[in-house]
Image (tube, rainbow, N blue to C red):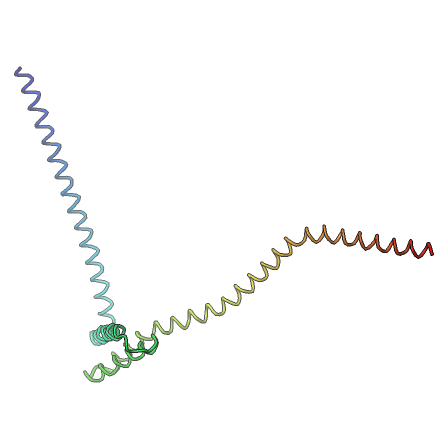
Length: 181
C-alpha cells in the first residue's frame, strides 16, 4: 500500500513537472514571438526614419501635409476633378505651403521631384504598354491565322479534292458530249 501511494505521488509529481515544463516552453515561445515582432517594428521604424532622414525634415513635412490634404480633397464629393488634377493641386498646395514657411528651395524641389516620380512612372508604364500592345496584338493575330490555317488545311484537302474530281468529271462529260457530237 505504501508502494502504491509512493508510485501515485511520483506520477503526480512527474505530471506536474511536465505541465510546468509545457507552460515554461510556451512562455519561452511567446517571448521569442514578441521579440520577433519587436524586431520587425524596430526595422520598420529605422527604415522609415532613414527615408525621412534622407529626404530631410522640411521635405518630409511637406509630403505629410500634402498627403493629408489630398486625403481630405479625395473625400470631398463635390470636387469633380479627375485624379490627375487633384494630384497636381496637391503638389501646388505643397509648394505654396513650403513657400509660406520659408523652406529652402532645395527642400521644395525635392518635394516636387518626389511627388512627380509616380506621374513619371505612370507615363513610362503607359508608353511601355502601348508599344507592347501592338506587339502582343500582332503576335496574337499571326498565331490565330496560323492556327486557323492548321485547322482549315485538312478540310481544304478533303473538299478541294472532291471539287477537283467533280470539275474533272464535268470536263470529261463535256468532252465526251463534244466527242459524241
